[in-house]
Image (cartoon, rainbow, N blue to C red; front, side, top):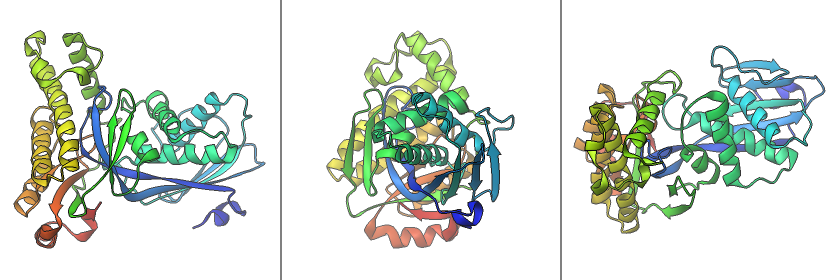
Length: 355
């Protein structure tokens, strides 16, 4: 199905945004810390044109349905159309001089949904990039990322950080994206040619609004209150005073974030030094912390990580918001064939992807 098949005309503007894998650094973005994601080949494409129907007409190829609306009131059932409405609401709120312009919008995507690789953020970034082109508002890639975060936080209601939107808007393929989530300063770092990152799909789907994601967010904010800091990202491991927190669960959540920030900084240095062993060890430590202290893993995910390491990966971990989705593994190119052969004993090619 194509734009013209649905709307009986050609589109005026097209743009896209990619999914991401977080190599290391989970739940450190909204706590003012560091993250280290990279772009994936999966992407969402948005095509738009103006219409004279006095309503917005939006077709999703993935859902094989069209939805029309004339206002930006959120649905009662957390529908996919809310992300479109949210982008339009935030965009017009930012541009009060632009009149409400009814549009035809065609959405197509190769990004698996609900798997922790930022399908929702890629959708928001792609829509906002396309609106930016259509209305010639000339926003920077960073500003588009900030607007996309507003959509997810203020309109959708997901208490996430800025990582997904930043890497989706600014990232480049085969480069690791080191981001300071407080200052929004970033570096694009080449991935060594003999390093291969692979995703394995646990096939456990989760919805951030219906999962424990927002609960973890609240727990980390409590930790910041206990410690008397604005952001956990400012606390170094040797500065973490657990005695200030009288809740063992909050201690565990905070310990994950504080040690994870330290791991991200070490991971950045290891990729610059092309030290694959150290990067792999940091990934393994990250997964253990994510599973034990943050309690965001699952039995199926833990099994994938164990099988990946035993098959020759230098390191493996759950990536994304947690509670299912993808794992990411680091394999030296000389071991990749054996690793892939062994993993295919358990998982089909449809569930294993090279980054």
